[in-house]
Length: 107
Image 1 (cartoon, rainbow, N blue to C red):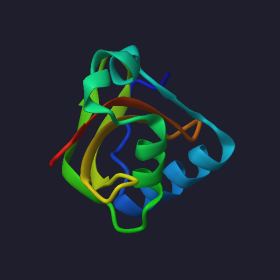
Image 2: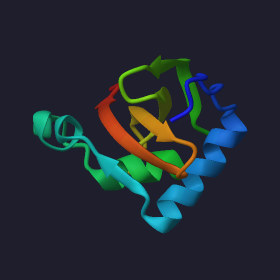
Image 3: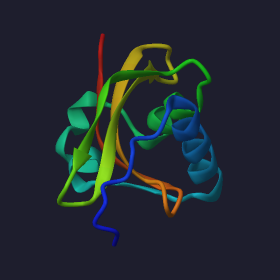
Image 4: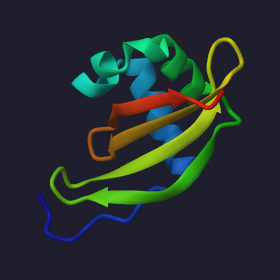
């Protein structure tokens, strides 16, 4: 691991990595994202759909996680039913993969 902190990705760079990772299956969900909020009724299909939409927006500035040496991004998008959805992901730009940390509906 490099000791120099990497720069955050631009929206275009992030979109490219997300599209590639989704296509190749290079993504996972944290235990929290998958099981801790089942009552939210947001499954991985909603998340992947939202991340593949061309009109998603970054919800806040990226946050660097020193423990995992990666950038976390908040993405605002829509789910399969067209409801507003917020997704927090951690991106490994070197391996072109991402991890879903959490997600919630804005409605």
